[in-house]
Image (cartoon, rainbow, N blue to C red; front, top):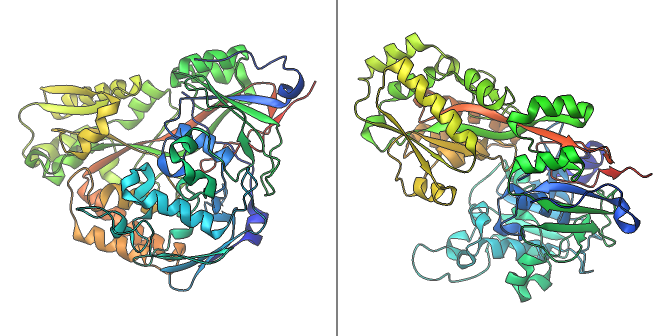
Length: 531
């Protein structure tokens, strides 16, 4: 596979993707330097170090401060060059990344191959405990940085070789056809040498290689300001002079401020306000695709859920469209695939009959599987009120269509939810959500259905197909193999696909050039209207 910068120039697209979450002052009537500043509604980030966050809120900010080796083209879903000039391999195992010459960090330090190696090593180093550590697990030497017992014997990945200032050679543990796509994820951004003098301080005031630079201190739970970087010389030169990320505790408050003109951009308009937003904003309301999916997972390690026909009966007893219409005002899409529609290899009805709402067939299959006795507990977190709403709807449908009379809801604090699933504390079906890292079937299938999955599901045929797909000569050759693996998972149904999220975006009359895509969080394309 070869991906080059010349292709990037032809395919580059202006893009914005943000996640919203107490508001600030009015963005109208600004004077002086702030006349070229716009505001974005956001929830408080957890970290601002590229290797230490997978939060949409954090990545929204980091997307302005950093540039990864590649980005994803909105039209094709394929990688295009950014900080890299090319990403090449002859065997899908040893990859050569050519770093674009002339790139600089906002402190003036040059961006080199060593900048990427240092950042990746820090993320992969187990004792740092950074969130994105596992993205480097397929690079040789990862195990030595993350031993099962004892301390690491090194702090460098043996699979990273800095050939010269602009050439980084990466050796993987096995061929991986999706590697170029993964390089679009924020975990693969570079960090300057200055960062390693004090990583804790750097997390509060990161120095990056992107089109914007921090403008003052991170004012926690209030705002983060960035301004156009004078050092940036790439293809994403910012059109606006500055951006203020206003921190909100909830989407409803952010939407109220959007209506009042106190914030310029909100990408997470509450579902209950969708109809009103469309009416009030007109062409300043956008509904765009997203890679996020909701599922209902089963603890297959519990013998009560070991029968695949029982799990398939649950799927057929759930009216996805009715729930989406009632809870999300029809904004989300009912799904019959494990993949989001924008992912290469997606098939609209991969699930077939098992995802079609059919109460009669569901009850027959349920009875055939021996039914269910005792209390059925449905698990979800308290992170959003809609989770309880749709889980209540699922409970009512299972009662009505399958005759399960004893159903209880288990609402878990958001801070404890994922750890509960990792520790396999759940004793019933649970809400599972996946936010796409990069547009590849592998990102969904291997991470959620592969080794160590939350369901406790094991299937050798599935695992073998994933390995074959990962080792294929390129993306096109890998897709049929990933599809076969998806078929295996759908036949067994350890996790039910429910619906695909859609972004609902609104913006003020002050800005133009808003072009939201599922892949990028760039704000460089937005202009502030003058006068």
